[in-house]
Image (cartoon, rainbow, N blue to C red; front, side, top):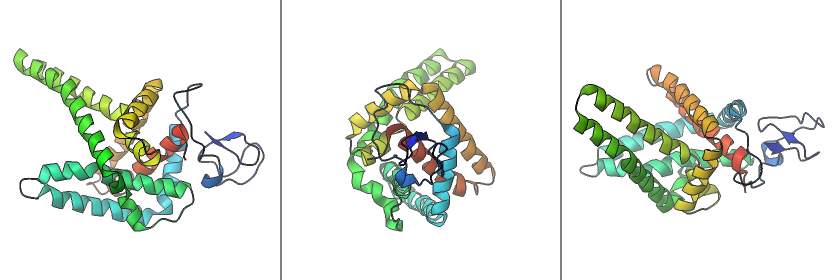
Length: 255
């Protein structure tokens, strides 16, 4: 939740008018700058509808920039993928910095700060911790998924392999869910990769079902975008970046 700067009552993060005192609100003045510790005190709330609403409002503020960066990101990743011998590695290395850059822009918009297109590449300032975060995530996935895939292969039979593949997929989804906020904790709170991953994991664990539902909904939105010959992703992916940022700001606060 955010707080009205006039009466200090709690308001929805997407609110433009305080429902308690009637004063006008802006994102920069609603108390989102207050750092929060979601591991202390009462359970935080997961306000999916509010996150989607504010994510959309953030996207609309710089829609041209967000869409342009998404297309440029696809081009960069496509070029990197075709690099001789190191293509897949290069794509993996730049994935996290490219993905967190738009969320850093969304954070600036929430503070009513000026946004310039180079801000979308701000994730590269945190290249090393983001890379280490990605590597550790891959290791965790391999530790959890490879034994399941091996069991399915050794057991033989199509049914066994499908079952173990599904379980391995659940491991991947679990890792993505628990470490959802790690990149933003690295760039916003300047945490090293492991403290950021642990804080994200512990925070998500407190509201695991709700956060999982949140991710599932965002996945369905992007699936719908992909079904429109992929054109819809031009809108749904940037909207997802902004929505995740709104969720982060509500749960962790902003410094």
